[in-house]
Length: 505
Image 1 (spheres, rainbow, N blue to C red):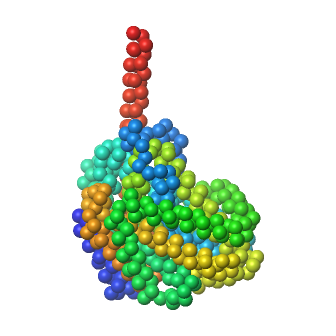
Image 2: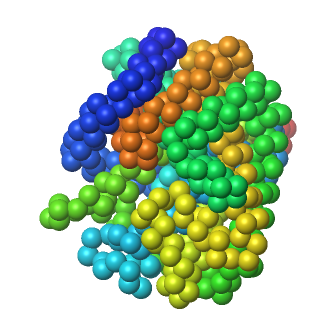
Image 3: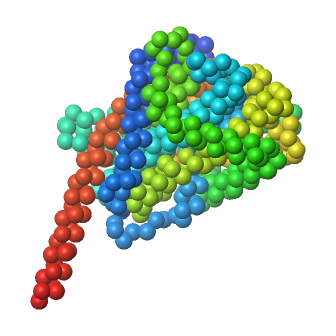
């Protein structure tokens, strides 16, 4: 079931999207509207709950528990660990939306704010921080922590069901196979969403640098070529392909961000970071629970709920991958490294790219907002065109998206292979190839069925069932943490008793 059922369902969807894209788009749109209307509140509450749970664990006594034996050391350095989890977690998304999201909100801000105003610009940056900060990384972190805790402290398999099977309810344990299958399906569609967006932006970058036309044919060709690359990379293992690509990617991303910071409006970028961080922290609870029951507006559904669904759909993939590279770290170190540090990196990224784009749009009248309305994938390159060394930066950004495409793809192929082979940490090359082909096929079929809109729709639809699985994982993790902490305290009391006896003798 772990391989045949999800792979078969995904294959059917791929064929459907290729043979009849219009009908698939219509069905998905209907299901999407129903999901947002009836369950949007559920996404908001679940994700906020995961943020609070992560912060509580980091500050509690449970933070001292280690993911592994007490004398075990981490397998990877902090730099390599951070590079791999960041590249797998949201690399393509940051490059794609770093300029496009703030300008999209500036054009069409949250309800109650006039577009094209200073208030719209401030809200645009605040919501970019919100959508890419603590909330998504808390989703990743808690799912990863549950997997890693049961894998390294209870010697369970690297599967979603390892957590849920620890619950004392027979009905839940009987559904373990279904939970693993849901994780595979959510992962496949979540990764395909990012690969689809990556193909769009690579196409736009190649047009900006080499004049390659933007078309479905070009985007399909990009997906096929990069799929060959990431499948090849995945077969070399984490220690080689994924680790080296992730480290290289982080260096390239940091250099590109530094170039924009120095060549762009440096002071305005610093002011943007300062102002937005303050407003983000002061408004975080209101944004976390914002719904629009008395307005005829799709804004929250199109943005916040889409993002929460996207992060949830990615969470089994990123969670399993982060767990795979995090053995030997304490719970506190794990949460700081997977929630706070990546959030700060995202804040810097959006301040540099979003702050530069908004400054150029407002004060220099560079038509970036118009470019976003026409095609969101061109926003970054429109900004570069108005900057010194713009052509070079466009080329570097295209290379960056390509490498993020590969790191996301090869990480996903590894994780899908693990989940569909009973938690095998080294799935066979044949299994990896199957998943590489299927994920690429999903990305192609979604693009043919309606581009970005179809990608967003599929993500929300397939993430909803897994959101309920995450709730069960949180309950299981909480129970296990309490049990192990009590055992640790018992051992400490026994050790102190023995020491007192030795001293007394």
